[in-house]
Length: 336
Image (cartoon, rainbow, N blue to C red; front, side):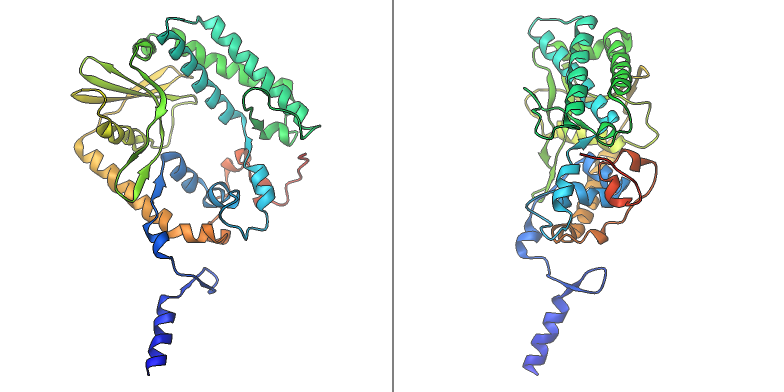
């Protein structure tokens, strides 16, 4: 009976994957591992769990080592797209403007646009060269590999025009719209935090990661602004903004009586203030904890390379996904 009981306990501890095959139970180290949460990470999971797997497991060298497409996923994970490049570039340009202004070197709109055009042109040239020479140098700073050019979906000249127009519109709005004057002035003051880390520990086991676009003191208020480069969102981003409030609760470098959260839509010139209460803050904490439970449950599947545990969400987001060709094998590609 002793041997039978021991065997029964082994079976009790055994876990099965989605296909009924035994997988190793989580080790104590895995159970105690601190899990990192971020709004962008969870957004990726909700948009498409399979893309989430590719990003955080399949394309990483240290995990999912059994992944048969490892090398291809690593290559595809480097791809960006027009919308991502536009958003990143605008954040970088605003950061440059505010940091220069803090030092007393205030750029005008034309200088900012000229610098933007230089970066855009260099990025397009880099992508054109990359199509014919994999070993081309990215230069003095990293440049994005554009999915649209990687697959030859659009020529470089057309893409440069589209990116230049969109970036220029957002810069016009940031520099000239009176609704953003307070943010420009606040971000130019000596103590302002620009593109700073928003990481903090929610609990001993949960690390919240993120970046603060802009934070500054305005009298007795801590103002936090989040730059948005697309049209006004249909999806709910209140959790992302409430995370900034949670970060502010850990931030003790400044003294303030309240936190004001602003969401700035640069393309459309809309500035929104987030109204929230203590109840909203508690709900945000609960939501993050629920998310982390889900991430913890999926972590073993990801580390073992069981991508079938991460379902595919086929839809309009696929055209912007770096891993489109992996999920949609019927698509004809002509990558490098």
